[in-house]
Amino acid sequence: MIHVCPLSRLEETVAATRAAHVLSVINRGTPVARPASILAENHLYIGFNDITAPQDGLVHPALEHVEGILGFVRRWPRQAPLVVHCYAGISRSTASAFIAACALNPGRSEAAIAGELRAASPSATPNALLVALADTLLGRQGRMSAAIAAIGRGRDAFEGEPFALRLD
Image 1 (tube, rainbow, N blue to C red):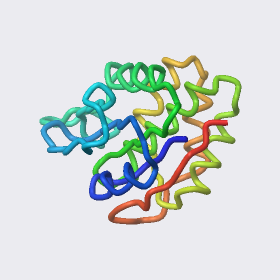
Image 2 (image 1 turned 90 degrees about the horizontal axis):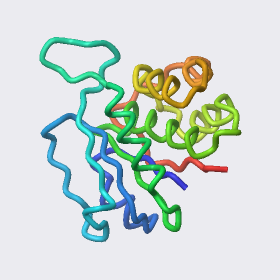
Image 3 (image 1 turned 60 degrees about the vertical axis):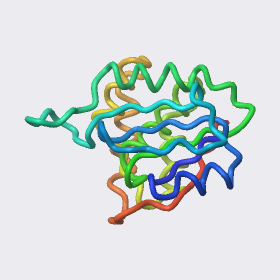
């Protein structure tokens, strides 16, 4: 199971789910206190801004970020849940959870995963550039991007509510 939350609810989500791994996808330099129950080697911090095109002074999602996400989720032993968070729990984290679910279930429909994502989180608005990069790396031939476009922008929110995304 993959759990998604905003930074403000990271500690609470890790405790409630008994997660053993944490993926932080957040602006470079944002302090993230690793929950005490998470071993250092089970926490990955990937820093980039929540943008969908290059902008001066900001770090846009790039292939190296997606490669880091994919490497981390593929090493995750799945004996305990994974928590993915960004600042708000709406864009980078939901894109990362979607990417993880697609990578770990190569035979599962992208549309089905995206539909489950929308049902679990009305505010989810996965970062389209992050998804497009993963779509290319995973050889999904545009289906990941199309699935995210089909669920549309999520409802406006300052922060998303924590939710879970199944892997099967």
